[in-house]
Image (cartoon, rainbow, N blue to C red; front, top):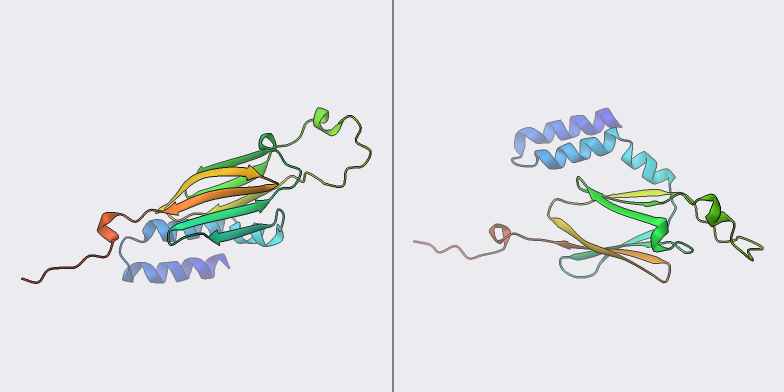
Length: 148
């Protein structure tokens, strides 16, 4: 899969201008087994929602997790959500007779376009919502060109 994808991107490079960072990101994703890891990892369940013309949310179902149990980071065009390993003290809760809601260890990554800005994250009612907005620079907005 990697060789095929790399040759595809290399075929596009001679007929495109300014897309090198995008192609480099895709190549990194294929080299890091990004898709292989995502396909085999279906926990936690998530939604990607377009909430407006230029706004998006990533929603992850994290029942049983608190703010201190989750780490959300954004680096080099990738948003990563991962569980923080619980300590022995967390496992020994007073009065816990049965633990049916597990706190699985997980790492989930999402590739974000360069023109998308991560606005923040909120954990409410077991749902982690990461809000994002696509920022369109003035130079890319539609405009009328006057004819001389």
